Amino acid sequence: MAVGGNGGKEQRVCFLLKVRPDRMEEYRRRHAEVWPEMLAALRETGWRNYSLFLAPDGLLVGYLETDDFDAALAGMAATEVNARWQAEMAPFFEDLDGRADAGIAPLTEVFHLD
Image 1 (cartoon, rainbow, N blue to C red):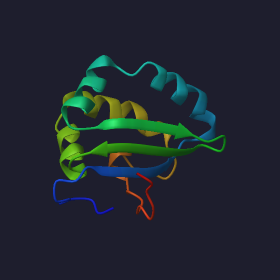
Image 2 (cartoon, rainbow, N blue to C red):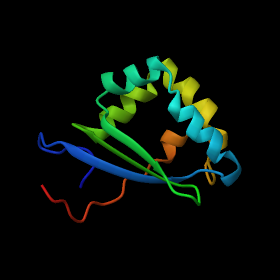
Image 3 (cartoon, rainbow, N blue to C red):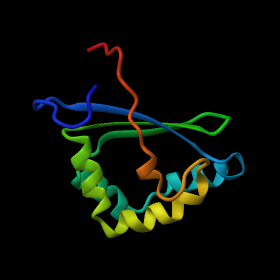
């Protein structure tokens, strides 16, 4: 799956991050209580069917669908609520200097069953 111009086709995006082992329980708790304004911003900027999966070792798998991933990221980056959320979430992750959303590197899709 190519990120960017997609010829009008919906993009499926998957990415990996690593949650610090000592922060996993709080990370789960925070995501059970995502701020309503954050949820609204995600929807308004084109994030659909967005899921996060957390493995016992802290590996975080994210998945979403969108019309234009670059535009969805840029839209969120322009919101005040995302800046607050990213500032609060940054300490939860390993190997990141700054915002978690800046560390999203989409994986290449090699198979999809319709």
